[in-house]
Every structure is written in C-alpha cells, then in structure tokens.
Length: 320
Image (cartoon, rainbow, N blue to C red; front, side, top):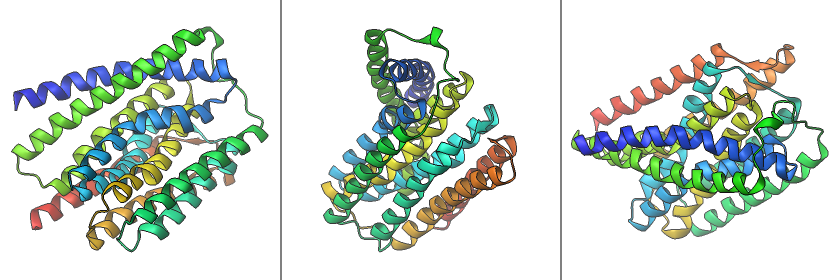
C-alpha cells in the first residue's frame, strides 16, 4: 500500500511540472510554426495527453480486458468534460470565441454522433475500428483546412515566452515522455490501491484509470489557463475527446474486439453524450445571451455532475 501511495504522490508532482513545460513547448511550437494555439491544442497537445489512454487501451485489449479498454475511452471523455473542463473553469473563466463555435464544436458533435452510430449496438468489430479511425482522420483534416480560413491571432501569447525551435521541440518531446511515465505511475498506484480495497475492474476502468489517464489533460489545461492560453486549454479538451472517442476506442476493436455489456455501455455512453450536449448547448447559449465566458457556475455544475456520476458507479458496484 505504501509503494502505491508513493507512486501516486511522485507521479502527481512530476505530472504537474511536466505539464507546465509541455505548455511552454507547445506554445513556442505554435509561434515558431505559425500555428494558432487552438490548432496546437487540437493536434500536438491532444495527441500527447491522450497517449496514456492509447497505451492503456492497447495493453488492455491485448490482455483480453476489453471492458477496461472501452471503459477507459468513455470514462476519459466523461472526466475530460466534467472534471478537467469543470476545474479549469473554476480556476479561470474560459472565453468562447466564434471560431470555436463555428469549427471545433460542430466537428466534435458530428464525430460523436457518427461514433455513436457505430458503437451503440454494443458490438465493436474490426470494421468499426476502421470507421472510427477514418472519422478521426477526416475530423483532423477538416479542422486543419477550416482553421486556415479563419482569422485568428496570438494576442494571448507573450512573444517573450517564445523558445528557440530546438529548445521548444526538446521540451515538447521530453515533457511528453514525463507525462506518460508520471500518468502511468499514478494509474499503477491508484489501481493497486483499488484492487487491495476490492473494487471491481469495471469501476477501475471507468474511474481510477480514466481519471489517471485524464490527469495530463487536467494538468495541461489548468496550466494553460493560468498562463493565459485559454485557446490551448479548450482546444486540448476538444482534441483529446476526439482522440479518445475515435482512436482509443478503435484500438480494442482492431486489436481484439471485446464483448461489451450493453447496459453498461449505454449507461456510460449516455452520460458522455449528455455532457457533450450540455457543453455545446451552454457555449452556444452563452453567446446568444451576449456573454463570452464559461465561468465558475458552469465549472461548478460540471464538477458536481462528475461527483454524482462517481457516486452512481459506486452505489451500483455495491449492488453487484
């Protein structure tokens, strides 16, 4: 138990520090390559912080733990919106720009709807996996092309923070490695404690593993918000959810198609759909009311909803 606790503490310390260096490297990369912060968040940051989910799902699929892999993907998306975005909004109000409403959200909603069509029958086949990956590629291509047609600026970026290309790429690569190692330490420690306490593998996948693999997104998003790079924080969530839904969920389908309990899938997937719809409706509704930020009330509602979801899972696990 002590070893597991040490892994959690050390992993968290390294995670927070490496996330800050990751943001610095990502922002400098955006400046050096002429990319917008939101685009870096949707690609480089989203892929880097989704790497733990990719690794966990691949390992789980190979070891015939398909429910853990699927639970990790769906649970991470739930954690990204309810926990990560909620806490980020509590730390610093998140601005909603027209480009996000016109580009990122419609693509995220469309991809989520199409993915739902593929997985709702509770049968993840190899062809489903191919379809999910194809959706990811199409989504990223659309985002890249449409992003070039919008007029974005770097007014939130301080040019004094820019690193040289070599240092930016170096910190980016090094911090990704640290994010992976530290998040895996956290997952290992938390999973070990959960097993010693007799918690089921399903609950571990939906909660401990999902939260652990979402910690890079939390650390990167909060660090981005604190440093004033709000576009990077929101873009990270949208991009990470796309990777989780279309890449992480595709891995078990392609590696070792799992048998999924339909009732469990519908319960957790419905929560993910509900949170996605709530995020989109709130963002569009705020702009219609003439406001421009997702603030503390929004963040509080998300965090409370996540605590309620965890409570529901805990109560249902006791009933099994």
